[in-house]
Image (spheres, helix red, strand yellow):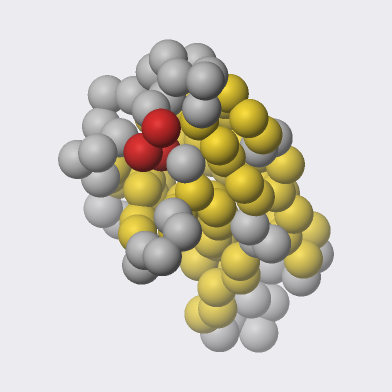
Length: 119
């Protein structure tokens, strides 16, 4: 199983970016998809999650600006980011919480992608 992210880059304050993440490989089901970020010198933080049991949640910092989506059949997730601020600058990582074909739970991470917000 491999997870690949795309869509990062440099954007001006107030701009928008969409991050994409796709899981390749055979799995049984997806319990949750999540997006984390880690700024320089900061701890990794959960930004958004779409969980089949608990629904969709966002951190207070991004609520109202970011939107997470998931496609179970395509095994993808996206993070639409609007009204970006310099403090959103970070490496963004996606995570898939899944059940493998052997019915064991596992989670898989993307490689991380840089998002920079600057004028």
